Every structure is written in structure tokens, then in C-alpha cells.
Length: 130
Figure (cartoon, rainbow, N blue to C red):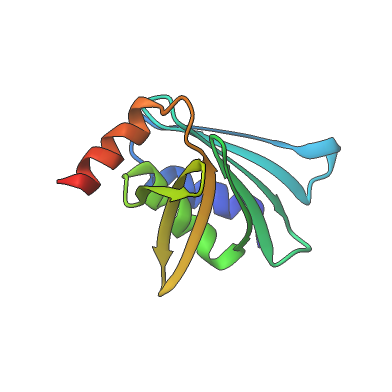
């Protein structure tokens, strides 16, 4: 993955109100930490290493351990324009929120405890209930 080209393409495709920042982690030009903050304050964090085929992504408390580099641009774009689903999952005595995106026929899913639901999550839960 060519990091400067990826970042340039990413900035060109995101909504203008979204803020993209990045830095070389540990001063390594082949290791980049990327932050994308949406207009509503929700943040995506990704660690991208040129020598690996996958990136690690976090959206607030949701962790995605392995997003293929070729799907990362689509993943970030879907995050910025709200093309993902959140649902409430109940198991025994726990409640969890599940965030999922489908990219090129592959579903990427992450869970977190359903405490302190954020407004951006509530809007997705409300939309799912309608």
C-alpha cells in the first residue's frame, strides 16, 4: 500500500466536514496511525502498516482487528456517510451493541457493552427500529 497516495485519495473522497489527521507511528514511514473525525464527533482510528495486508480499525469502542488494506478505503467511506448498522444484542444478563458493515460481500462486525449509548449510536438504533 502506498501511504501518501492512500491518504490523498481518502481526503478527496470524504465529506468536507470530516477531519483527517495522521502521523508516522514511532517515526516509521511504513507505519501510519490515521484518525478520521466525523462532523458529529464520532472518531475512527486505524493503524496501517505497509508490510501487512490488513489494518486494525477502531470506531469509538468498537474494535475491528483485521480489515484488508484493499477494503480500508471503502470501510472509512461507509463510516463517514453512516452506511453501517447497529443493533442491540442480548445474551443472558448482558446487553451489547453490535456495529456491522458489509463491504464487497464480506461482513465486518464488532461488539461493545451497551452502557452509555452515544447519540450517534442511538440514531442508528432508532433507524433500525423503524
